[in-house]
Image 1 (cartoon, rainbow, N blue to C red):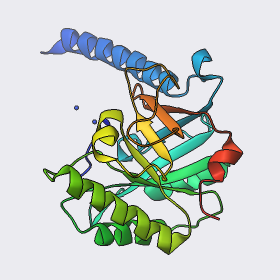
Image 2 (spheres, helix red, strand yellow):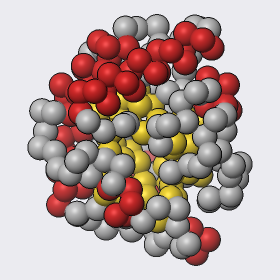
Image 3 (cartoon, helix red, strand yellow):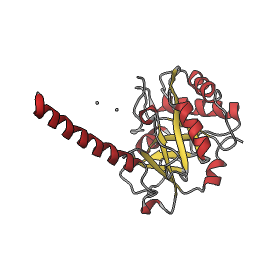
Length: 240
């Protein structure tokens, strides 16, 4: 997420060569170890007042959930009207094994039919086992060149349709500025907001929202989030 990277669609001779290859191998090993360690670091001290979580997509297909300190995890399933994240089934199973709060999101394109996109999302998500507390999310961060009014109505249609089909209000993910511009009147849906220039949890809600459910505060080394809600309260936002 920006926020989310679009997925339609992470790169001599003799003794001198052997020395160079050896040096490169050592350097690569050090970098790999550093990145791996960073991905499983304990929750930062400043995030401790909140529930800590992570979100991933196919760019982190092998993310190690078992060694993650996350108390909730969100993963990408779909985009547009036909694209499917091939890492979704694995992530979904791993989160189930870990037993933490899990959520799944759809990256929306307001230039498409919102009902077609919602049906695509539900078809893919429902192809995997579900359980009470699973959170459904619309990831809205592009206008596709459409007007504010069009994007707003598109999102409302998608959200209302998924609510009617599942019996639960989806969460809306967006960047703070995007939500403030395009999200007027959508305050009834729980907000997951990205704002990287603010310390974890140190944000005010955009547009008509009175509060926020999740703050995505960085994408280094992966997307990291905090929530003022407990795991039980987060689950209450999910499927019955």
